[in-house]
Image (cartoon, rainbow, N blue to C red; front, side, top):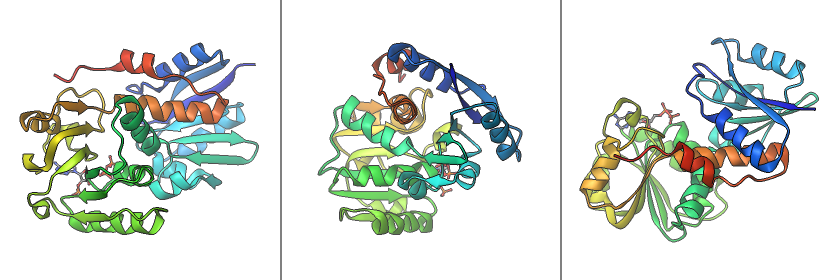
Length: 277
Ligand code: ATR
């Protein structure tokens, strides 16, 4: 029998998840149907209840419901706990298992697909919202030399740094600072995890922050050369990436969690790649 999955959000038209999971199902020979599910705002739980009652096996969760899914879950994995948000659910009887694979997907893209080990590197993360929160533990697990979180609202960066220090198993130095505090410090990998790119804005980052040979990684997907990537390029950075690989890798994590088989992501990444121009 065909097993049913969906991605739930509002809006949902833009989601690439059905395309990705359908491609994964084809190459792995899994008999699944994966659709888009538009939930009215304020009716997340009812919409999921109906999907489960009709035999739905699992869901991805996108904006604005990642916190609703956190509240709906019966069993939160550590990654979801730390992220404070859920992007994948698995339904088994009364149980709602919940995960957040965004951070793991990001790290896998950087280390595996882009061939940039994070061990021993100096990492700078722009932004202290949900995207950063989800990425912190998987990044720290790679053993970087240090992680600096920089944010306009400095208190949020400091709070996240505290949280990361409490939860990490290693003892990587983690600091939360403001943009003006960066001084002349340079970094080997710089992630833009702010929402600034969605409105074509540039965080107030000095071009001096990029160390020679640096990787500049924009977590947003499909926006081309965002102001952040342009800044990096003008600073001489040649290794530029956007979130297409992260998108594919978090999907592969969810697919493996649901189906027990890990799909290769290369074909999907190639298909979804939007040139960085
Ligand atoms: P998400 O869940 O996508 O991370 P969020 O929780 O709303 O979204 O967080 C957005 C982040 O982008 C915040 O860190 C925000 O900075 P503030 O906390 O100071 O508001 C950051 N951000 C958004 N627009 C920005 C801009 N133009 N410049 C710098 N940072 C920006």
